Amino acid sequence: MGWALCRSDEMIIPASHSIVDQGSHQDTAILEDVTDNNVRDTIARDDILLRKKLMEKLQECVDSEKVFVAVTPEMNCIQWLAARSRFLVQHALKLDQHIGALGAKDTRSDSFVLWYHDLLHDELYITRWRLDPTVSSGNVARALIRAAQEEAKRWKLSKIVIWDPEPILADLLQLSIKPRDSSLSCLGFFSAPLNTKDVEWVLNEKYAW
Image (cartoon, rainbow, N blue to C red):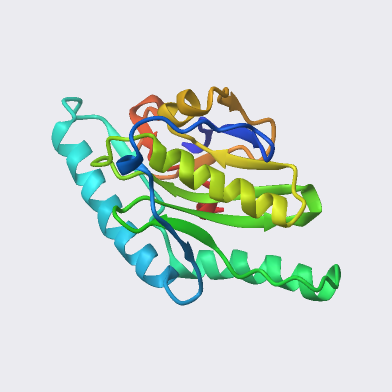
Protein backbone atom coordinates (compact mmCIF):
# COMPACT_ATOMS: atom_id res chain seq x y z
CA MET A 1 0.00 0.00 0.00
CA GLY A 2 1.23 3.52 -0.71
CA TRP A 3 3.80 4.75 -3.21
CA ALA A 4 6.32 2.28 -4.60
CA LEU A 5 9.51 3.28 -6.38
CA CYS A 6 9.74 1.87 -9.90
CA ARG A 7 12.68 1.28 -12.15
CA SER A 8 13.78 4.61 -13.64
CA ASP A 9 16.40 4.26 -16.36
CA GLU A 10 17.77 6.65 -18.94
CA MET A 11 20.32 6.84 -21.71
CA ILE A 12 22.18 10.03 -22.60
CA ILE A 13 23.16 10.46 -26.23
CA PRO A 14 25.64 13.26 -26.95
CA ALA A 15 24.57 15.40 -29.89
CA SER A 16 28.05 14.81 -31.29
CA HIS A 17 27.90 11.01 -30.89
CA SER A 18 28.93 9.29 -34.12
CA ILE A 19 26.35 6.92 -35.63
CA VAL A 20 27.40 4.52 -38.37
CA ASP A 21 24.84 3.09 -40.78
CA GLN A 22 24.85 -0.61 -41.52
CA GLY A 23 22.97 -2.74 -44.02
CA SER A 24 22.04 -2.10 -47.63
CA HIS A 25 20.93 1.14 -49.23
CA GLN A 26 17.41 -0.27 -49.47
CA ASP A 27 17.25 -0.41 -45.67
CA THR A 28 17.77 3.33 -45.31
CA ALA A 29 14.87 5.03 -43.55
CA ILE A 30 12.91 7.79 -45.25
CA LEU A 31 11.90 10.29 -42.58
CA GLU A 32 9.49 13.18 -42.39
CA ASP A 33 8.93 15.69 -39.61
CA VAL A 34 6.22 15.21 -37.02
CA THR A 35 4.53 18.60 -36.81
CA ASP A 36 1.34 20.16 -35.49
CA ASN A 37 -0.34 18.96 -38.69
CA ASN A 38 0.31 15.22 -38.30
CA VAL A 39 1.12 14.64 -34.64
CA ARG A 40 -2.49 13.82 -33.73
CA ASP A 41 -2.62 10.96 -36.25
CA THR A 42 0.76 9.72 -35.03
CA ILE A 43 -0.42 9.65 -31.41
CA ALA A 44 -3.73 7.99 -32.30
CA ARG A 45 -1.94 5.21 -34.16
CA ASP A 46 0.53 4.81 -31.30
CA ASP A 47 -2.32 4.46 -28.80
CA ILE A 48 -3.86 1.64 -30.83
CA LEU A 49 -0.55 -0.21 -31.12
CA LEU A 50 0.21 0.21 -27.42
CA ARG A 51 -3.12 -1.26 -26.37
CA LYS A 52 -2.53 -4.16 -28.77
CA LYS A 53 0.90 -4.72 -27.23
CA LEU A 54 -0.56 -4.80 -23.72
CA MET A 55 -3.14 -7.39 -24.75
CA GLU A 56 -0.42 -9.54 -26.30
CA LYS A 57 1.70 -9.32 -23.15
CA LEU A 58 -1.28 -10.39 -21.05
CA GLN A 59 -2.01 -13.35 -23.31
CA GLU A 60 1.62 -14.46 -23.34
CA CYS A 61 2.16 -14.06 -19.59
CA VAL A 62 2.07 -17.32 -17.61
CA ASP A 63 2.13 -15.57 -14.23
CA SER A 64 -1.47 -15.01 -13.13
CA GLU A 65 -0.34 -12.41 -10.57
CA LYS A 66 1.44 -10.24 -13.13
CA VAL A 67 0.09 -6.72 -13.65
CA PHE A 68 1.01 -4.52 -16.60
CA VAL A 69 0.67 -0.75 -16.24
CA ALA A 70 0.94 1.85 -18.98
CA VAL A 71 0.11 5.51 -19.43
CA THR A 72 -1.35 5.73 -22.91
CA PRO A 73 -0.04 8.53 -25.13
CA GLU A 74 -2.37 11.52 -25.03
CA MET A 75 -2.46 14.46 -27.40
CA ASN A 76 -2.91 16.87 -24.49
CA CYS A 77 0.43 15.81 -22.99
CA ILE A 78 2.32 16.35 -26.24
CA GLN A 79 0.62 19.70 -26.84
CA TRP A 80 1.44 20.84 -23.31
CA LEU A 81 5.13 20.02 -23.65
CA ALA A 82 5.28 21.77 -27.02
CA ALA A 83 3.52 24.82 -25.59
CA ARG A 84 5.96 24.99 -22.68
CA SER A 85 9.03 24.92 -24.90
CA ARG A 86 7.56 27.41 -27.38
CA PHE A 87 6.58 29.81 -24.59
CA LEU A 88 10.11 29.64 -23.21
CA VAL A 89 11.62 30.33 -26.62
CA GLN A 90 9.33 33.26 -27.43
CA HIS A 91 8.70 34.97 -24.10
CA ALA A 92 11.45 33.98 -21.67
CA LEU A 93 14.52 33.61 -23.87
CA LYS A 94 13.14 35.86 -26.63
CA LEU A 95 14.80 33.90 -29.42
CA ASP A 96 14.16 34.43 -33.11
CA GLN A 97 13.90 30.69 -33.74
CA HIS A 98 10.61 28.80 -33.84
CA ILE A 99 10.03 25.20 -32.79
CA GLY A 100 8.40 23.52 -35.77
CA ALA A 101 9.30 19.84 -35.68
CA LEU A 102 7.94 17.92 -32.70
CA GLY A 103 9.72 14.77 -33.83
CA ALA A 104 10.40 12.58 -36.85
CA LYS A 105 8.75 9.50 -38.32
CA ASP A 106 9.63 6.78 -40.79
CA THR A 107 7.32 7.00 -43.80
CA ARG A 108 7.43 3.24 -44.42
CA SER A 109 6.67 1.93 -40.94
CA ASP A 110 5.15 2.83 -37.57
CA SER A 111 8.52 3.95 -36.21
CA PHE A 112 8.77 7.49 -34.87
CA VAL A 113 10.31 9.71 -32.23
CA LEU A 114 8.84 12.71 -30.42
CA TRP A 115 10.95 15.23 -28.55
CA TYR A 116 10.79 18.16 -26.15
CA HIS A 117 13.24 21.06 -26.09
CA ASP A 118 14.47 21.63 -22.52
CA LEU A 119 16.54 24.70 -23.24
CA LEU A 120 17.08 25.56 -19.58
CA HIS A 121 18.85 22.26 -18.93
CA ASP A 122 20.65 21.90 -22.26
CA GLU A 123 18.72 18.76 -23.21
CA LEU A 124 16.50 17.45 -25.96
CA TYR A 125 14.19 14.97 -24.28
CA ILE A 126 12.81 12.03 -26.21
CA THR A 127 9.22 12.07 -24.99
CA ARG A 128 8.08 9.04 -27.00
CA TRP A 129 10.03 6.41 -28.93
CA ARG A 130 8.52 3.70 -31.10
CA LEU A 131 10.49 1.28 -33.23
CA ASP A 132 8.22 -0.84 -35.38
CA PRO A 133 8.94 -4.51 -34.52
CA THR A 134 8.37 -5.44 -38.17
CA VAL A 135 11.40 -3.35 -39.15
CA SER A 136 14.40 -5.65 -39.29
CA SER A 137 17.05 -3.03 -39.91
CA GLY A 138 18.60 -0.97 -37.14
CA ASN A 139 19.10 1.83 -39.64
CA VAL A 140 15.59 3.10 -38.90
CA ALA A 141 16.53 3.52 -35.25
CA ARG A 142 19.80 5.17 -36.21
CA ALA A 143 18.02 7.54 -38.58
CA LEU A 144 15.56 8.61 -35.89
CA ILE A 145 18.34 9.25 -33.39
CA ARG A 146 20.30 11.16 -36.02
CA ALA A 147 17.23 13.34 -36.62
CA ALA A 148 17.11 14.06 -32.88
CA GLN A 149 20.81 14.92 -32.92
CA GLU A 150 20.28 17.36 -35.79
CA GLU A 151 17.43 19.00 -33.87
CA ALA A 152 19.59 19.25 -30.76
CA LYS A 153 22.40 20.89 -32.72
CA ARG A 154 19.92 23.29 -34.31
CA TRP A 155 19.06 24.52 -30.82
CA LYS A 156 22.63 24.25 -29.51
CA LEU A 157 21.69 21.49 -27.07
CA SER A 158 24.55 19.20 -26.12
CA LYS A 159 22.67 15.98 -25.46
CA ILE A 160 19.57 13.88 -26.04
CA VAL A 161 17.96 12.10 -23.10
CA ILE A 162 15.70 9.07 -23.47
CA TRP A 163 13.91 7.34 -20.60
CA ASP A 164 13.29 3.61 -20.43
CA PRO A 165 15.17 2.95 -23.69
CA GLU A 166 15.11 -0.40 -25.41
CA PRO A 167 18.32 -2.42 -24.88
CA ILE A 168 18.56 -2.89 -28.65
CA LEU A 169 18.89 0.87 -29.03
CA ALA A 170 21.73 1.01 -26.51
CA ASP A 171 23.49 -1.80 -28.37
CA LEU A 172 23.08 -0.04 -31.72
CA LEU A 173 24.52 3.19 -30.36
CA GLN A 174 27.10 1.46 -28.14
CA LEU A 175 25.96 3.48 -25.16
CA SER A 176 24.95 2.52 -21.62
CA ILE A 177 21.57 2.56 -19.91
CA LYS A 178 21.87 3.86 -16.36
CA PRO A 179 19.49 4.47 -13.43
CA ARG A 180 18.29 8.05 -13.08
CA ASP A 181 19.22 10.01 -9.98
CA SER A 182 16.24 12.36 -10.25
CA SER A 183 12.64 12.34 -11.53
CA LEU A 184 12.21 8.87 -10.08
CA SER A 185 9.06 7.02 -11.11
CA CYS A 186 6.56 5.84 -8.50
CA LEU A 187 3.23 4.07 -8.61
CA GLY A 188 0.61 4.46 -5.93
CA PHE A 189 -1.19 1.38 -4.56
CA PHE A 190 -4.21 2.23 -2.44
CA SER A 191 -6.59 -0.72 -2.65
CA ALA A 192 -5.88 -4.46 -2.50
CA PRO A 193 -2.39 -5.54 -1.35
CA LEU A 194 -0.10 -6.05 -4.32
CA ASN A 195 3.48 -7.21 -4.59
CA THR A 196 5.25 -4.46 -6.49
CA LYS A 197 7.55 -7.07 -8.04
CA ASP A 198 4.50 -8.34 -9.94
CA VAL A 199 3.96 -4.94 -11.56
CA GLU A 200 5.61 -4.01 -14.86
CA TRP A 201 5.39 -0.40 -16.00
CA VAL A 202 5.32 -0.55 -19.79
CA LEU A 203 6.79 2.48 -21.58
CA ASN A 204 7.85 4.54 -18.61
CA GLU A 205 8.83 7.37 -20.93
CA LYS A 206 8.94 11.14 -20.66
CA TYR A 207 5.57 11.74 -22.35
CA ALA A 208 3.79 10.48 -19.24
CA TRP A 209 5.26 13.22 -17.02
